[in-house]
Length: 201
Image (cartoon, rainbow, N blue to C red; front, side, top):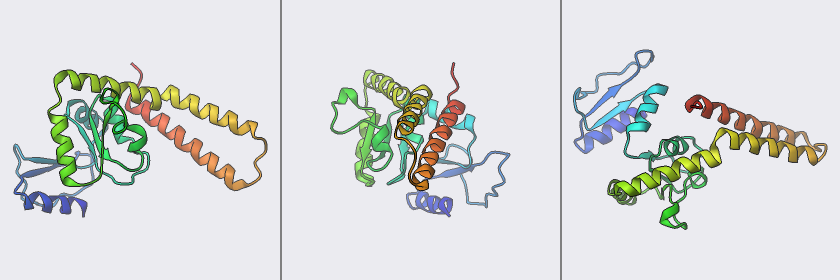
């Protein structure tokens, strides 16, 4: 239904489109009157890890559109690739992206309310970045992604949290233990995911 909705939106603006799914995908794509060559929009369904890496390393920016999203690894993946990230100013991106309230020399992306005109203005700003600005932004993005969300930093953070928890003594309520175990599980999954996405070089 999401794909149908996006296609309807593309048609409403007279934009051409094509749909691509991996050959290993079980998705059946009905005939949507696609434009096979040079479409305005290319819908990539269930793209592979290598396709994602190629996209992140060749794109001009990453637009992260979920509103009130939890942590969300998308912005961090974009930042580690040196991409300017434009995201909603709610939820997880407010932790991963540095924007308003900091000097421009510290910015790692744009946090904006989910309003079309505001995003259009931010995109114009991103497109018009001078080469030097873009390079400096890319370095800040990579440094923040590694410095806060890198595997070693996250592992040390989890270790410290576990040591702090152990120093608190016995757990009086099993609900707290369940919570701590879920936090540890999330952190472990994140660290493993980052290791798979960006293996050490």
